Image (cartoon, rainbow, N blue to C red; front, side, top):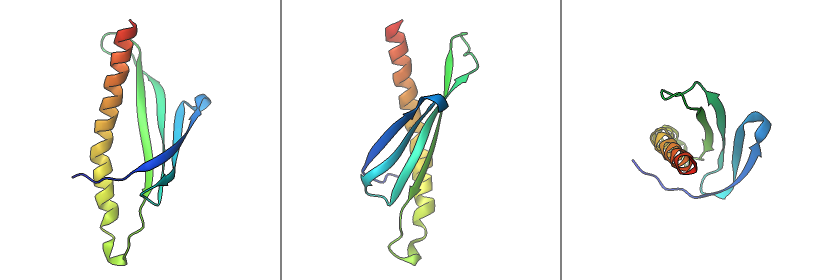
Length: 102
């Protein structure tokens, strides 16, 4: 399933916490905020360094009618499908950058 929404985000780096926090300043949903969290991970199979990337997001969409409460689980399902794809893209880009730097 695919839904389309646009957002302009404000992003703040919280280096001491290993986080990039974001919040919507303008967009199609009522509220959007979250964070990317970076943590050192156990060494990978090849013995190289590894980083664990976690993602947390909160999205609020006002239903135009109380009868449309199905929007929340529908949105959760779309996010649950999309986040792993996005994280895989981030991992691929990071690995390509690391390989190019080596």
